[in-house]
Image (cartoon, rainbow, N blue to C red; front, top):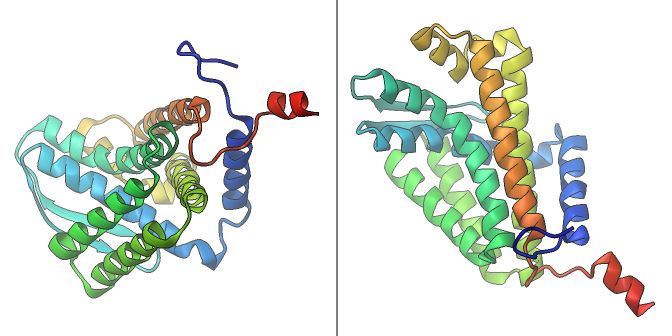
Amino acid sequence: MRTASGAQLDFGRLALLVLMLGVGWYFWYSPVFWPLKVLVVMMHESGHALATLLVGGSVDRIHLAANESGSCLSQLPPGFLAKVAVYSGGYLGSAVAGAGLLLATFRFQLRRWVLGAACVWLTLMGVFYAGDTFTIAFCLGTALALGLCAKFLPDGAVDVLNLFIAAFTALYAVFDLRDDLWNSAVRSQSDAALLANLTWVPALVWAALWTLLAVGLLAVAAYWSMHAKPKGLQMPSVGARARRV
């Protein structure tokens, strides 16, 4: 299968993505993945923080918790659209992060730069916005771990790590929105509830809207990534193997 630009679908890369999605799904409740879940919560809260800064507000502090919850405390300027943007920023932040990881690693071959950017992001958030000891320890500790991976892992292993983080981020974004859709107790305390109080549009509608947008964004990013010409993580296509045989 080719895109309009002539890039072919890389079946090896697609199989690896499906495998990692399956592993993340099957072992979702394993404590081994707890750091990744907290990392995605940080992406979510960073989305709120970035949206706040873009509309002219200020971020006071960000809190992460060991139970995988988080909060972003900020000062918002007056205005309806500013509040809608900030309340929506968390949903958009985690979805954009997963899509960006896929594209940066495989479409643009920025494997080590991806981990380097993650180190800078976590360090800045920890130093300037962390509101408690756990948050700053998690941000700086995770930044150090990702920096060591960027420095010492071989190219292929960096690609696999980035792909797994991207797949897990995508799963978390979808599961987070799924809970907002089907769990009324969760939905009543979610960003969708804040949007509902602001707009009078039901929280269920907001959750459904952001679910569709998040899934669509991740699907487009995965499609582009799976059709990019591989330079680092190279797996021979089925056709190539057949010709050699």
